[in-house]
Amino acid sequence: ALVSLRELLDHAAEHGYGIPAFNVNNLEQVQAVMAAAAEVNAPVILQASAGARKYAGEAFIKHLVQAACEAYPQIPVVMHQDHGQSPAVCQGAIDLGFSSVMMDGSLLEDGKTPASFDYNVDVTRRVVEMAHRVGVSVEGELGCLGSLETGQAGEEDGIGAAGTLDHSQMLTDPEEAAQFVKATGLDALAIAIGTSHGAYKFTRPPTGDVLAIARVKEIHARIPNTHLVMHGSSSVPQELLAIINQYGGKIKETYGVPISEIQEAIRHGVRKVNIDTDIRLAMTGAARKFLAENPDKFDAREWLKPARAAAQAVCKQRYLDFGCEGMA
Ligand code: G3H
Ligand code: 13P
Ligand code: NA
Ligand code: ZN
Image (tube, rainbow, N blue to C red; front, side, top):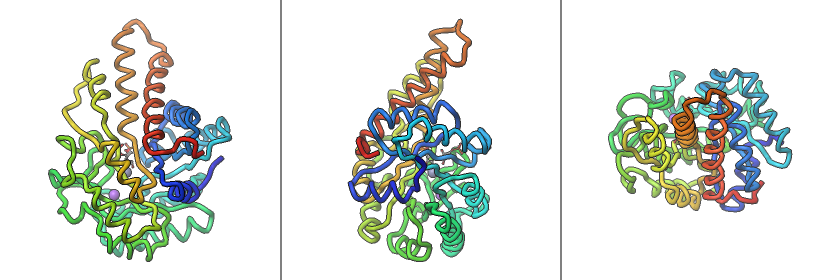
C-alpha cells in the first residue's frame, strides 16, 4: 500500500535502521526494487526525478507505482518526488498522487544556482503547508552537494549546483539546520557532507576530510528528532565498474560512498539513503555482458532480464546492509 515517507522514517528511527530510496524510471527498475524488497521483507521508497517523469511520462510513472502496490500488497511503498525544484513541481507531484515530495530549495529554480537561506525557508515552508494538508510528507535540503576534494559542485547528472562552491556551502551547518527545521516543519532533511550525484564522487577511497560522517553526528546531536537524508550515496562497487569495462565500457577510475560509512551515518540519524547510480551501473554491466556474449540475440527481454536481475541484487544488498530486513 502507498504510505507517507514520514510513516516509514518514523519506524526506521524507532528501530535504528535506514531505508534506501531508489530512483526509478521504467518497468524493470520498479520490478527490481519490489522483488528485492519482497525477498527480505523490506519497506520501499521509489523516487522519481523530474527527468524520470519526463522520460517515462507522468501517467506511466504513476501507474507503475500503482502496479507495484497492487503486485506486492504486503509491502509499504512511498512514491517520492526527488529534487523538486519549485513549489509548482511539488504541487504537480502531489496532484499526480505522490505520497512524498522533496522541495530542493538549496538551489534556485534553475537547479544550479545556490539559494539563500531565506529563499530556501520560504519555498520549503510553502510546500510543507500544501503537502501536510493532504497527508503528503516533505523532504527539504540544506547545503549543496559537491566535492570537498575538488571544490566542484555535483552537477554530473544535471541535478546539483554548477561550478565552484566554497567549503562551507558543501557542509551543512548544524545550527542553521536547527533553524531550518524549526522554520519549515519538514519531515526529513537532506544534508551536505561531501557526497555528489553520479559515478565520479571521489578519486580515491574517501577519508574523513572528503566524506564528513563526523558532520552527520554533529547535526544529529543538534536535531536528534529530525530524520536525515543522504543524497549521492551510491557505493560505486568496483566489481560493477569492472564488468562494464570488461565488456566494452569506458568508465574511469572512481570511488563511491563505502557501505560501512553509510552504516555509521545510519547509527547517527540518517534514515533515507538515495541511490540511483549503483542501479545504473548494475543494469548497464549486465546488459553489456549479455549482448557481448550473445551477439545473435535481439529480443529486448533477453538482455533486460539479466539487467533487471543485477539491479535486484544491488537493491537486496542495500536493504540488508541498511538493516531493513523484516521491517516491512
Ligand atoms: O538526483 C539525481 C538522480 O540521480 C536522478 O537523475 O535526473 O538523471 O533522473 P536524473
Ligand atoms: P547517486 O548518484 O549516488 O546514486 O545518488 C542519487 C541521488 O542522490 C538521487 O537524489
Ligand atoms: Na541540492
Ligand atoms: Zn539527490
